[in-house]
Image (cartoon, rainbow, N blue to C red; front, top):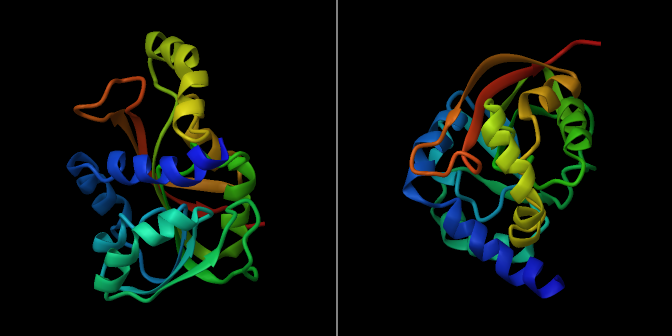
Length: 207
């Protein structure tokens, strides 16, 4: 699994998450980003073309060396300075209240402890900062959920630990965020079990 995780999964993610149908969703998630941004699960830099003009810098958290290498051309073309600044979303190497915004796209399905990662994001966001996300997870329909639970073990093996059964809005709220914007729907052109999406913006709850 070491070779598969290190050399195969990042290439699969680069292709599957780089399909044209994801681009409007990435643009939507990136809308409103500004100032200093931390991106959890930077991958191969697929969000780079969608950073708005108000973004000053991006601290990229990405564990896969190959993912970072695959981002090389996108990084060279980016007008926004990007630094690979961390390897583990569950333990961010930044002081409290560092960032204006955080971004997570198709990431919380794979992080072993997504709750811990979201609590870390909350810690490093400034008061009033925003978390922008687009994630796939638990479907709203029971019939689809049953299929998700059936195929989840296969999905985790093939897709580098990716889960289909995580309740993303609940994870965000339980980590101390208030969700200000949320849209849940099935992604067109994707099987429902794989394409139950949540797109939203959340802010840390004070205290």
